[in-house]
Amino acid sequence: MKSSSIISTAFVFSMAFLMSNISFAQSEDRPERKGPPTYKMLLEEMDSNEDGKLSAKEVKGPLSKDFDKVDLDEDGFITEEEFKKAPKPKRRERE
Image 1 (cartoon, one colour):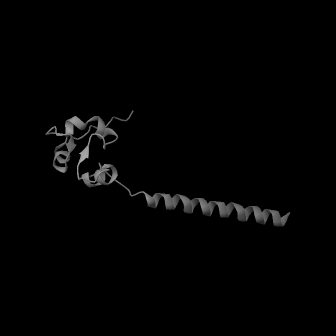
Image 2 (tube, rainbow, N blue to C red):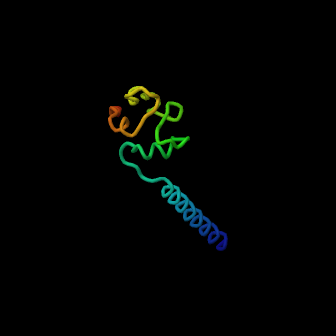
Image 3 (tube, one colour):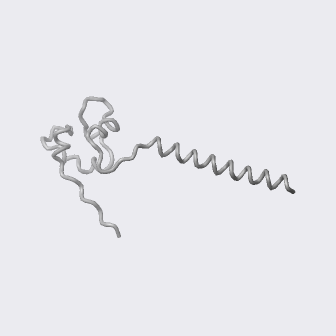
């Protein structure tokens, strides 16, 4: 009986150690971001043809819904200058 409780205890501690290492490793993979993304971040994430601009076909998420508002010169692309001048999205109120 004594050996089974030692084995059970060792198993529980091993699993706890393993789970803490997995969760720590996952949090290191994802950089912490506070605030809205920068244009450089958006390019890295969405600029599939690497032309330094974002087309309507490339953008995803909330930016795709407001593409026309951000594309000030209406050429079908969002440049860094247009992105900087874009209206900031309103934050949703918490209920």
